[in-house]
Amino acid sequence: MSSDQVDLPKSMQSVICHAPHDYRLEEIQVPKIGPGEVLVRVLGVGICAGDAKCHAGAALFWGDDFREAYCQPPVTPGHEFVGEVVALGEGAGPKYGLALGDLAISEQIVPCWECRFCRRGQYWMCDRKHDVYGFRQRTPGAMAEYMRFPADAINYKVPRAITTRQAVYIEPLACAIHAVQRGQIEFGDTVVVAGCGPLGLGMVAAARLKHPGCLIALDPHPNRLEVAKKCGADLIFNPEEVDVVDEIHKLTDHYGCDVYIEATGNPQAVSQGLRSVRRLGTMVEFSVFNGSSTVDWTIIGDTKELNIHGSHLGPYCYPLAMNMILQDQVPADDIVTHEFPLARFEDAFQMVHEAKESIKVMLRP
Image (cartoon, rainbow, N blue to C red; front, side, top):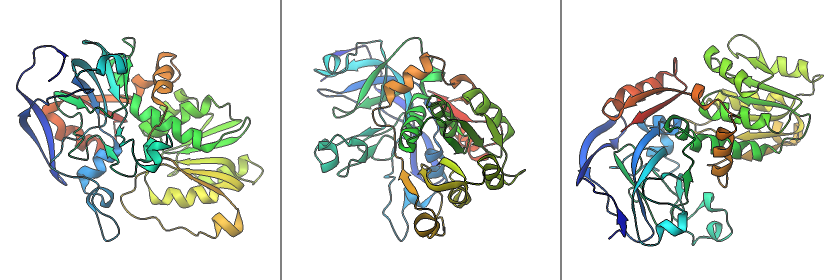
C-alpha cells in the first residue's frame, strides 16, 4: 500500500503495443505501488525514433537471426515523459525529495543494481535486466494516464519553471549530452553532428558548450537545419544538395573533422562519417538502425586509426539537461513541434514516420 496519495480512479486509458503496427488504446487498471515506488499522472510523453522503429517492426526490437526480441508485448510504450506525483510508496518521498503535486521524471532505464555494471556505477549498461520503460512488461511506459516508477528507478524532481512541452525533451537531451561527452571534444575542434532530429539538435546545443572551433550540422530537412542554427551550429549542410565529405575536407585543409557524431539512423551516414573524420579522429555512434550497416573496416584501423565510441542512454545527464533548459541553452520549444491527445496516437506515430513537418512529437494523456 502507498503511504501518501490523492484519490485515484480504478482504470485508465493506455496505448498498448501488441506487435508491429498493432498498437491499441485500451482501458486498463491504474498501477498500484509498493514501498519505494512513485505513481505519476502523465502530463506529456514524447515519441522517440526508437518508439517509431519499434512500431514499424525494426529487427532490434522484434528479433532476427542474430538477436532476441527487445520488445516484450503487450506493453505500454513511452520513455520520454514528465508526470505529476499522485502517490508515494513508503520511503519514496525522502529518497527522491518528492512530494504530492511535484513534477517528476525517471531515467529511461530501471537498473537491477546487482550486475557487474550496476555495481560499478555503469547502470546504463545493466546486463541482468536492462529494463527501459516502454519495452519490457516489468517496466510499462508513459503512453497512459498514469505511470509507476519502480523502487529501483532513478527519479528526479522537475523544476516548475520547465513546462510540460520542455520536460518531455529532458530524456532526449540527456542522451544527446552523453553522446557529446563520448566525443571528448577539445577547444578548437571541428565537430560534425550528422542528423538534426531531436537527439542531433540536442547534440549540437551540447557541443556548442564545449567551445569547438567549428560546429557543423548535417540534415536533409531545411526546417531542422534552421533549428540547428538556433542550437549553435556555425555551418549547416544538406547532404542531398552538397557533397558533405568534400565540404568538410575543404574546411579542414583536407584533414577531416576532429569529431563526427552520427545521429541519423541511416546506414549511409556511418560510411560518410568514416570518410569525413581525420586520422586519429573520433567517431561517436548513437543511432538505432532499422538494419545493418556495411563499412570498410580498414579505414578504422590501418588507414586512420580512429577512436570509435558508442553512446547509449543518458547516464548522469538528467540534471545537466534540466539545467540547459532552464538556462535557455537549447531551444526546446522549437524542437518539440507537435502534440496530440493520447487517443490520436496513430496520427502522432504517422507524423514521426513521415518526418516532414515535425521534429519532436508528443502526446498529452
